[in-house]
Image 1 (cartoon, rainbow, N blue to C red):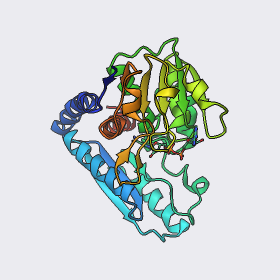
Image 2: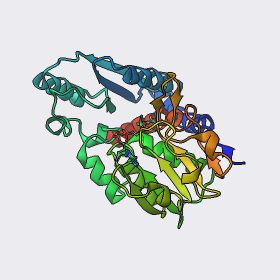
Image 3: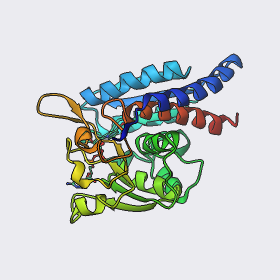
Amino acid sequence: MGQLIKGKAVADAITAEVKNHAEELRQKGTSPKLKIVRVGQREDDLAYERAAIKRMASCSIDCEVLSLSLDISQEDFIKELKKVDQDETVHGVLIFRPLPRQIDENAVKYIIRPEKDVDCFNPINVAKVMEGDETGFPPCTPEAAIEMLKFYNIEMKGKNAVVAGRSMVVGKPAAILLLKENATVTICHSKTDNLKGVAGKADILIAAIGKSKMITGDFIKEGAAVIDVGINVDSQGNITGDVDTEDCIGKVSVITPVPAGVGSVTTAVLAKHVLKAFNQLTGK
Ligand code: NAD
């Protein structure tokens, strides 16, 4: 029987470390600040926003939300982003995506300077992550997946790691981060032939597909570590992952639950990034 590894302990450890540093800064009369930019009122954005506000408070990091109307024009959106970028009291900026249709991501993704871009929207940060440049910011979710593996002492070096999903926010950066840890990495996607066969050779499987409980026990190698990044709502309205945990737990060594897995670590990584952005911007 495999072990269910939860996110809380990982998030608590990161939170404690960030809080320590942020409180030291506060005593010196300064503090890191996150600005969240939300367009519209999507329920998943609002849920993440609530979690992020709570996490920043427990890390002693300031947090503000810029809530913009769903029908904002691209021109006005650009003006708002430029103001946020130029605001010297703001150190980290998180922009919820996807943006509404009238806004072309290509026209806005360079506006927030890479030093403040704490969730890897700006392509300069993407390049830094590819290069292994430590001043860059990987997206928080795949970094949270790696933090889970590190915290629970799962060896990545030399292991076969399979990432299911190739999005810019999860799959691709997760693969790059695994490579940085010296894993041998395969990326699978919707056009992959025989996902079951490929996943079945993985010592580490990261699922970031967006399909409720698609990964069942027959996709899993005996003793694998399984990190479930998926957040889905099933037909009964329950939050589920991409992995059928009950079906897999007999085969895995460790597996993350959904909810209470990777998702709970993501906001802690976000807080860590805001502190890092503050340090890099101010030289403190
Ligand atoms: P996405 O829709 O952008 O990408 C899904 C990926 O899955 C694509 O690359 C696609 O090729 C691949 N895919 C689809 N069907 C497949 C199949 N049958 N076999 C193999 N690959 C297949 O989604 P995303 O933004 O990358 O998010 C993935 C999942 O992670 C979603 O459930 C999302 O809700 C969740 N998510 C969680 C967090 C978190 O904090 N835990 C953050 C972001 C996203």
